Amino acid sequence: MTSAQIIFIFILALGGFWAGDKISYQIRTDLEAGYEIAQVLDRFWLDLNNPFHLSLEKVDLLVGLGTIALIGLVWAYNSVAKGTRRQGEEHGSAAWARPSQIHPFKDKKRSNNILFTASESLSLDSRKTQRNLNALVIGSSGSGKSRYFVLPNLHQANTSFVVTDPKGELAAQTTPYLEQQGYKVRCLNLIDPGLSCTYNPLAYFNDAQPEVDVMIMTENFITNTTGKKNAGGDFWEKAERALLNALISYIYFTKGKDGTLIDVVDLLAKMQASESNEELKSDVDYIFDAITETINEYDNDDEQDQWGQEAVDALNGLRFAASQYNTYTQGAGETKKSVIISLGVRMAPLHMAPIRKLLATDTIEFDRVGQEKTALFLIIPDTHAAFTFLVSIFYEQFFEKSIYIADHTPERRLPYLVQCFMDEFANIGKMPSFERKIAVMRSRGISTSIIIQNFSQGKALYKDDWETIVGNCDSLLFLGGNEKSTTEYISKLVGKQTLASTDTSESKGRNGSWTLQNRTLGRDLITPDEVGRMDGLKCIYVLRGLPPFFSSKLLAPKLK
Image (tube, rainbow, N blue to C red):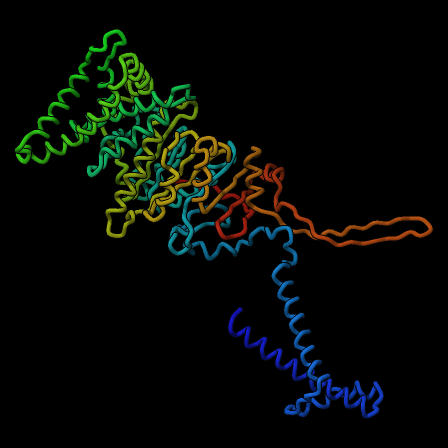
């Protein structure tokens, strides 16, 4: 309670005591003087005209105190009633938003927005709106995820873009238009690798901490090439991780950014182990023996400053490679043989001639996306998952590199905003730390639209981390679908409304009666079955902090 409220209550109590005392005095003296009741009722206020007179009679003082008590009871009742009653919202306050409610969050200039519906959009200036640009877009096959969301936003031509493009239709439709708008358009084409830009993951390792990038890529690769785990699977995976860390590190620290994953898979092909001959050594074993000898020589050299900084840096990196290789060699011959075979199976796609050519050099240059107007399309097959690991590694490296670049600019932000439209999100592999990246990318000028067919897809892929990912999307767009977990999620997200209901009952007979009862009921603003029956041209858009919008879908743009 504020001091102003306390003062008000004190004045009200004092006034009540004063009025009660004076009215009691007037009534009491009139009755003692023999006035009739009707006359007393006409005269009870007369003593109020004498404000400075106060009766000290016991009865009058008690009436004054009683008046204070009455005022206190009324005040307490009103306070309790206000604190517990929400008229018309007893079961929920959900309601469809009015189109005008989005106005504070959209830019007057259409091109400065990300578009969601025919009437709702969100300003790209996230600092002004205090909303991030991350979005969860849900729609079943044929609901228009590309046509009614991705295409209209590519037509905006207002940021750089990274787009997952199943079948390559988006690239084919938008490339001429985007090039007219001054964009540099590049494609990583995993359907027709011969038509693709090339991509060398090792070219994007951070010079300041390449060992970290090695471990990140290894973790991603193992995660996205692992099927159902068998007993003891964790042991084999850990051994494979150690070996792959060693091989990638060796290639990077001996060849630098000219090293490739093809060099790694070729190095693995030279390895061998025997369960019957523990002393068998392959060419790779001899390479790492030589590295260990060189490291020992350096450590025991009294004139280490004569080695040269470049040699020392390479040796420090190879020290990490040797430590990982040593972890792998702790196993018996049979174990090492199994690890080599298992890792070889995982890396089988890298033996395909078109993929070897695609990974031999780097022309995709995704480190330029945030520094100039660029559109990158990842054209992926939608009928198999053979190259899922490459798409996942690409996205993880893109986020890592872009965040690093942003952190090393004066503004701590990319010069060009970047929007990632991650269509078929459930089919591009799992990024082991995506839930962390989506939480921090906004401040670097990066946003992502996660596009899935149903809610359960994301849950199946990311398990408990899925809730964190969804929680970092301030926008949700539902374009249609009838999958159970999705319709239930949308219905629950939108909320419940309160409805007024009138019940009547009638009993007949000699003493018949009729009753009428008014009550309130709770109902989902839109039930799961109603979500599944939505008109094909309608959609639901939810922006954090606002009621949900039930709107028409965007119109697909005409690209010239």
